[in-house]
Image (tube, rainbow, N blue to C red; front, side, top):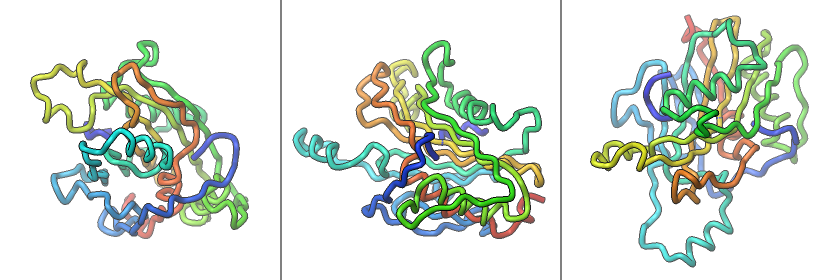
Length: 263
């Protein structure tokens, strides 16, 4: 992975309702070879600065007013889930060469640690990275089934991915949800006099690895979200094991239109 800062579900396959306040629009990725729905207010970073050819990066740059009263913040925290769209989130799509040395069972932790290394997170032993849940879903001949009431459940997301990616091939979908201790997004530039240790904070990481061996590709989709309760590097926030509704919506909309992108 590159140095750009940059993650459905636990074992309970329950349906999750999409936040109706989040508006999505279909984005063309990699010159239109891939499409995915991204929250409408998120900025395509390639319109601001150069992004590596193998990546597409989006940033939720909407920031809440610092003058908001504590009572309003409390009311907002009660009405909004930590898993909804929120300021500071970074979404990355990334094309990697398929790693034959990594088996599917180890893939979630492998890609999570790979991202943590990019973010310069302390090791697991040093307490700088925590995996809350990880899952591997082999995709073979049969499609999962889903009811209308489970539009963003694991079954429905896998069904969409199988229909769009694995209709004539076998592969796997690997997911991981966890936390990493990183230097806050944008803080390196805005706080040049502070040491990186002063600026460490926890972020929530949701990552999905689409393992496509027949085209020699590991396609990584990751969402990094600031933990709103962060007041210090000792504050990890609550433990989240599920993929968020926003991330599930992005995954279920993911489509490869031009397979020649992979050579």
